[in-house]
Image 1 (tube, each protein chain N blue to C red):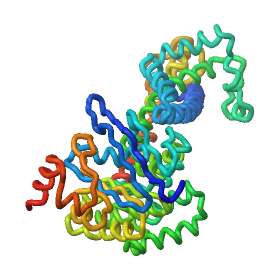
Image 2 (tube, helix red, strand yellow):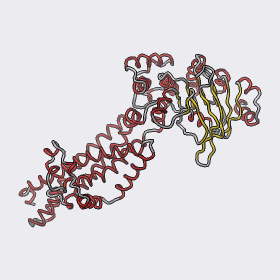
Image 3 (cartoon, one colour):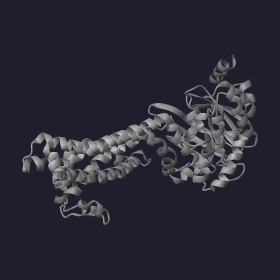
Image 4 (cartoon, helix red, strand yellow):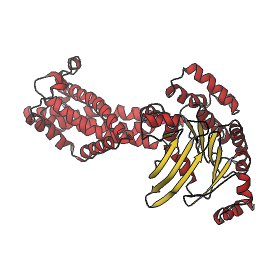
Length: 248
Length: 235
């Protein structure tokens, strides 16, 4: 587990949903502290790619390695691995029957067996960090979308993960709430968190990413630093995509 | 209608025995049904297969046939269901401990049959919880058991409780079959005794027995309505 060794490695990953080839021989490695943004048209397999990394989506063939270990099969070992990979969903998925603070402390208390008092203290600090400490005792339905998503980020961070996966974290938000979530993500990125971010926010990709991955039809089409990708996309597919989203 | 007053003790005895069957069978069916439901939603394919097989068999077989298997099949296999002679419990439910095994046989049949429906009622509640809740719990590293206990089940009760109540009400009515499989003196067998052996007119006896079942089922239904209303407010 040398420092230079990549944290996440996908090698020849294929995934079929019935007759649909959603991931077509995808190989990718993400180094420690690297921020990789995955973009592409809808249906290109980018969300599936993100979800295979903590095995929420099992793959058909190929290998995925996290921190030097191949992903284990369903069971205790997989649960342990998942506890080290934070995940943020498009639809937040905060536990609806628990308060914001309980959402943040459930993992530390039940999975990491931390003392409730210590978990609470750290949970409050994390909520403070994402700017919603005053919402700690409310239920998710009482918060705005942006606040819920920041709570979800705090919940993932409470596990002190080695990497964070973001599956379109701002796609379900009203436009004026996108910024507050991206701010939190940008500060995480600048602190050296390893991140895989599926998003349509090109601004975030430009500013915060070390690399941009462009996917289309289940294939990884381009893999380049953001400046290079946005200035000179190599493939026709990427040029076409960028021309459509950047003209407005 | 004098039979209702003159033979009140017979009705009351029948009511008491049927209530005993129902309390025991409901408890057993809820426990077994919960186990089967957990199997059916578990991530382990063989467990899922066993759970699904169980539901397919017992939900699709007439209760009468299950009762036949219990009352005639178990003795043929040399069992008197003696494992149900639970010390302590048979002090309250005296029929559990008798030498005549038919109370125990009827109980087994009722539990096996009802558990399949309990399983499906619980599962429908679990399915009503958005998939993202369980996904978020898994992505935090919660195990399957923790996921059920802390995230999914607390949210699934809401959707389970009404269908579960219907299953138990159906079970109370189904328990009337026990009297035809050797259980002496339950509410339905009371009809047989009073009209057949003692020659009372059928209709008053049937009314008396119906009242006995209604005393058990109507309050249960009312309780469920209350729970449902309270949930509607909470939403």
